[in-house]
Amino acid sequence: MRRLALFLLLAAMLLEAGVDRAQEVIDRIVARVENDVILLSDIHQLAEYQVFVDGKAESDEPILERLIDQWIVRTEATAARFPQPSDQDVQRSLARLKRSFSDSESFEERKKQSGLTEEEILWQLKSQLYLSNYLDSRFRASIQIDDNAIADFYKNRVVPRAESRGQTPPTLEAAHDFIQEALVQRAINEQADTWLKESRSRVRVENLLNENTK
Image (cartoon, rainbow, N blue to C red; front, side, top):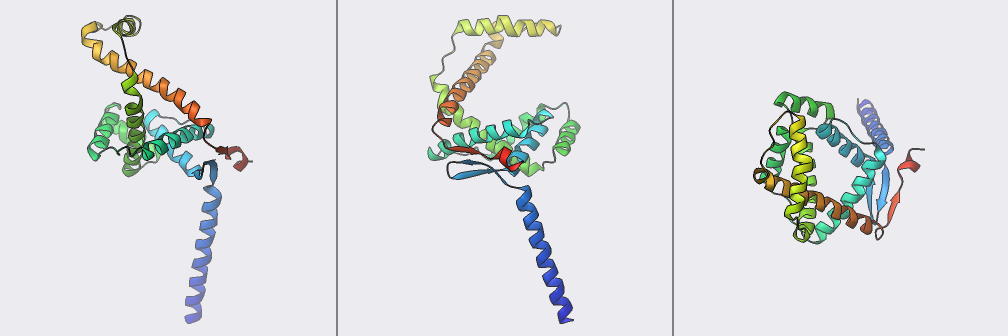
């Protein structure tokens, strides 16, 4: 009986070691950024989130590029001791995301399609919100939107879009604040893109994705 117990214990240990080795093969380093690493599982997690939000995911290479950019933003935000979003902010973000679906059944179906759990969705939301909040705080103060830009956006974007849908366009006054915020967000994205390109030149990045898939 003692020999059987010992045999079963050894078999379990070998099986566990085999699983660990299989996990090592599946989850591997796909990039080194300074002294940190990005794993293949990180790409898969973001891909699942893209499927959940957009219904489809990018290929591994552009997702890896996004993860490298996120590393740069997160590293600077952490160094600046930028605060994490509150639980209330995350829940509001989740509520906005749910409203982007036609109904709760569509939300649950997309969640099932992505393979994400509720906890994983909240984690991704918190992570993305942290990064976007930092970029907003970094660049918003330097952005100025004049009334001419708002009027042009209203004339060239808002009115034609409403008319194409057979709807009555809102007045410029009613749409003013929404247009201004949209233009601010666009300017933040443009400035963030420029900053990230400059930051990339100062960060040591080693892309191992293609090497690991050969």
